[in-house]
Image (cartoon, rainbow over all chains, first blue to last red):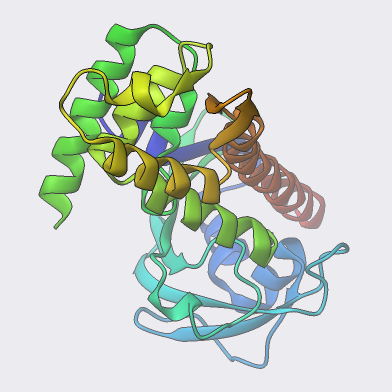
Length: 156
Length: 112
């Protein structure tokens, strides 16, 4: 089983609007803030930018800072960034922790635009693939451990 | 779109505890569902009692294993709650994305 199957979350939605419109909603920083529930003084997203935002989402994270390190912007196609998942408090330890990669992909689809968002890199935080097989059979465990072992060896 | 700092921190500890093959083998043994003693865990002869003890304490520190005194010896078992927390973390992340995408869709479709 490849690492990616549990290392990554994928979500999709079909939006009844042209790709250009959806692209603006995701990459225009003012529009992004509206649906993402955030505020920022930054004028725009651009590849390489380290963008500071403040969450306006109701709950424990409201009014907390978070950062997006913009990776890629391919017009009307791909928008990606790295961040510390859930890390709204910029602690000193946090800087050393691995980040996850968020990728938005846009595709033409019947009736509008298909938006796919993936967030990957959770295995860097904890090997979720291992936790999923707890309590299952020993053969499954053996395979998982071997895969994990290869993963750790390769990652060093 | 935020998860709490303590959630992230706890997951990192879990990761560190699992990042060792010997500890994974001990967990595998505990995952069978019964409680075991240090003597039983060391019975294969591959690892010493001292090493088993050390690894069990790392696992206990991450909340993955639990030791209970039973008569003269301590019996160890798996703490499934901690494992469930890790799974719940990923599910929470998924739900947050579902919410964000729903707001994006509403905003775009209503603005025309």
